[in-house]
Length: 92
Image (cartoon, rainbow, N blue to C red; front, side):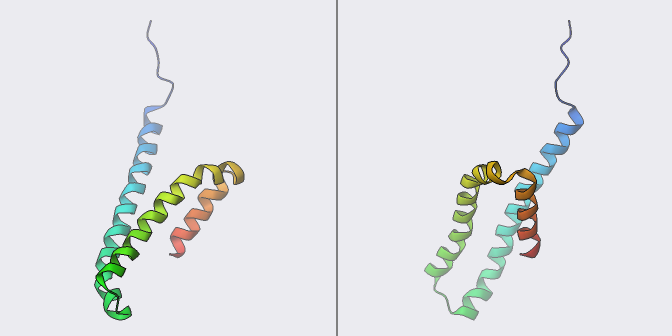
């Protein structure tokens, strides 16, 4: 007796690729921020400590957002949350 998988292999590959792209974009954003730091530091006359805090705030925001996204999605629905996050990402 052969047991057929419950999931379509192609769908799993597409979903995994999209998830990996999300991780890639997160890393890309971090890299872009690191390239902008010297210009921000000169323009706003920030100390090294202030730059470290500024950089850490972006990552802390990502962690806090990840903690509450599930609850927000339960309240508003997946479609609205995905559209809102895509809008925020696109507008910068």
